[in-house]
Image: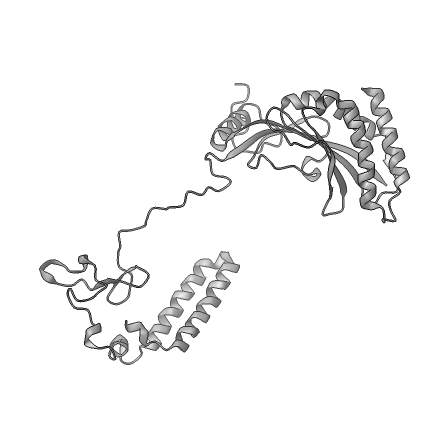
Length: 203
Length: 132
């Protein structure tokens, strides 16, 4: 491919610069967008510098005729690459299976793929187990309704603070959330700070 | 100088119904005593009581924990469904076993007096027995 002609040293330099920019982006996520834009600019500058003078043709000039794209002869061509009347769309799949245009930009390939992961975050209202509890202070005053997403968790003294906690019900988190919501709306404790706390008090 | 305190996790309303009278009695007695010397400001016993919703599966004392800020030393006191048949004696035994557990941890600590701890917990057990 045409990019085979890029010297390894240049590739290493580009990798180093990108690593520096993206590493800084990960450390300071607030500036993620600006760091990504900075990285994009660096790539553009690098490619421009690399092909300065002869442009991409210069980089391609050493290739044999057999490497150029011809209808039906390019081994990586999709059947869709051949347009109406035998014209070639000049799109191909790279080594990673990504559809690219002849100028190496990404080609439209049907949009986002559906997620295959079935994992759930702890706060997802799904079927993972959760426990509804009531918390009381050291004098036995009711403080709040709450949900624990780890039924086996043992609360520390720092959390209990001389008070106690009663587990009321365990079940799928989606169900427990509904029950807690109803309790917080109708009979909240002083530490239930949710916006809907007490919205249906007395009902 | 340290205060004694009690906290609890109940595995259901049934567990709370059985243990809360004991828990409140212990807390009221604990307010009247001070432990000196002791290397932490607070010594806490945390009850983990099995119930209809959740069973901790712990019986007796264990799981010594020292607060990362050095504010307390806590000891878990597990009470199973079976232990709930004779709560008073189980709690008294746990407090006595707790003495040995704490002593084994702090034996080389200059700010710890094993005799003082034993006297105080014995006194606490006796006062608690009068209330229940």
